[in-house]
Length: 88
Image (cartoon, rainbow, N blue to C red):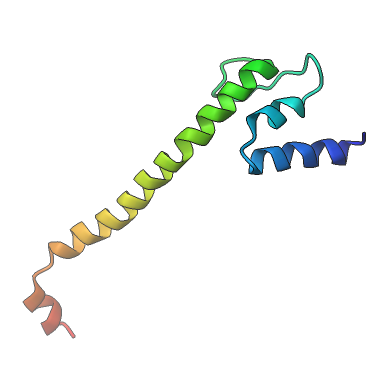
């Protein structure tokens, strides 16, 4: 198995949100580490960590989208309509 095949297995598992395949894409005894893991984790813990990421991302996107809509709407609501129309 070459490096490109291993990378494609990892990317396909990530995109499919398949935590078992994601963990299986690591070699036996392999570890994963990023700033959120507080050190290297093994393949068993990787499946749980990835599931937590997959579960939290939609919530984060929802909060960002809500803020992106609310902030400009709040600012527009403060403008006096008569002043806004007279400016045009």
